[in-house]
Length: 101
Image 1: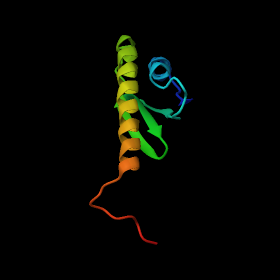
Image 2: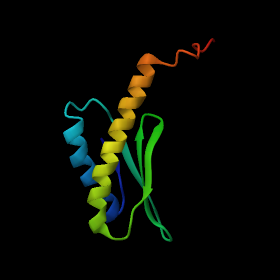
Image 3: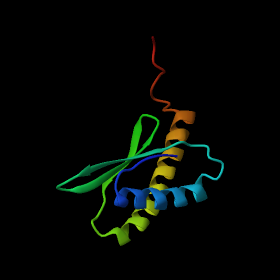
Image 4: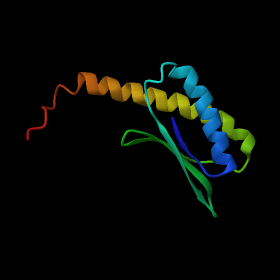
């Protein structure tokens, strides 16, 4: 897990995400990157990427007591999205052929 957060709200999100992520991905099979873009007007926006895919994006609320629950929910959503992506890669779509180069 790669963390690129800059603010206290981003760090709180990273800590809660990492805690929930360790429970789901016990073997450390998947590598995700958590980044943050702070803005003066809207607060902090966090992103969770897996490979070249952005799986989660959200503006964090100003009330930091809500952030741990958001981080745990994000970990569950991202983990399920990765499993769905892996499953789709394994089976593929029978209606589409492989790319021809």
